[in-house]
Length: 69
View 1 (cartoon, rainbow, N blue to C red):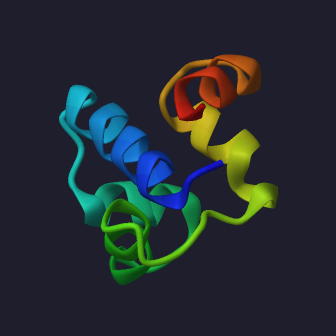
View 2: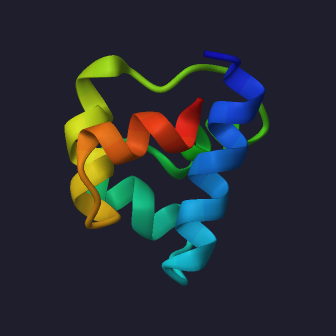
């Protein structure tokens, strides 16, 4: 998975949900700086967060992974 594309997809999903970085961060128990780093391609999301990320966006993990590829 390309970290830049992953971050772009998370940003796209977040914006579609009309959610701020801070709101997403609070839902995932991470800092808004962490979300910002993901979206800028400065780091990867922790694989342990995939289930939580999918839940926040009301999609399945397989849909999330498909979105992130």
